[in-house]
Image 1: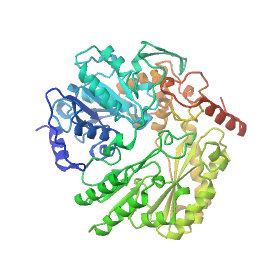
Image 2: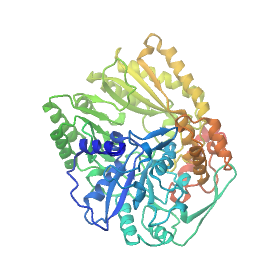
Image 3: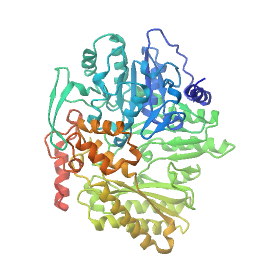
Image 4: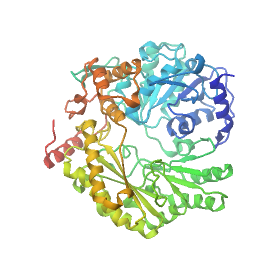
Length: 593
């Protein structure tokens, strides 16, 4: 037995199918769909997009396909950025020993723009030609990408055949039917027909003219079949199915619940408010909790954008609390995000009795375990309001008063943005003062404050998408200054504070991948072929790769004031809102060009 076969055998033995087993047999003419994951087994189960589609395909008898999964198996050999199979054995899926390269459709999900290079790594280990133009229908699989990391799909335009925008439960099934009908047809005709499916973007149907240094000057459709605009699809909870809200498979250690989709607020730099707000059916979630109890799964992750907005949150928490009361060992509940201005005393009391945990392993301070996460984003209330947020310091203070009254919450994690246009050095340093005020208002000498800093990155598909950004090298110095000031202000209590900062290499990649054109993908390919370790990518390495393709790093930091954005075909942002935000920031303080 090969190393991958032994590992996939162990995976299958420990998996628990929480929605029931997959009983539909493979039919002779079924397509083979394989979802590639850049993660190892436990984390791959929490990737809700691919897992929801995997579950939907395998439970729907009307879909002419069977879905499989292939992972970054533990036995794969790492060579800098590359992965290879041990002893050159074929890369297979968990469910099927046949090489992944023989699939009909391959799905890749990218959650973050800084991880786009993982597409190249996965295609290489699978033995699938990287470039879309080098693949042929009937001989190579159709490669379909999706998720938030492809909010700007253009860097991967020459590597992905199709990009699914929004929620793909309808568009992906329509694509499977189309491929099944034309599995022996011409590739060009198949892609043109795929472009007619709402929510599917086919990059090869558009020709882009490039600007020096970066950017797009013109976009021309290569065929009348290419729509002027491709809009993301968002579906009703009934159309999405249970696996969109609850992880269908567990490794026995934890399970995931997504109680609501979207956010009731639409902040100018946030993508959470883009999808319409929808609640998951409460019966699905409470029944799911009962299933977790039957299997003894005692870690429950609630990963909603804003769980405090879930209409039935009390009913869900009550069901989990009842399970926790009956369980012989503690049931841990991890709630990814709440809005401090929506927190109530009842909510905090219920959560506190559920042995609350947190996803961040950095929380190792000697402090009460109860953690509440609050995202002020900026220390200056004026910036908070300019970017359409509502979390001013007064609202944060009221939430802290509630936390102090319950006595269960001793750790506060604060999320702040650094490097937004119009931000001053004094306002950045004020983050330290803000953290100290939070600690004092919490009123817990044994408490702790974690400051999680993130660089402001204009996100495609948001009102702030055209704004300039700071050089990550510069932000490094700002973060050091904030940390030093907090240490100075905290004095003897400095050990009750921690400042967390992101991975520098990833920020460099996000800066160019989040808003770059198609040439950025070619630069990534050059780095990949050079054996670059992307986790330790330097500015010099990135600059060199970009220059080889007529790009400059600084060009991607600028205000994007050209008529066309690289992602123009999928852009649905109101330009008037963009202009209003830019004018307000400019009036506040001059924005560098």
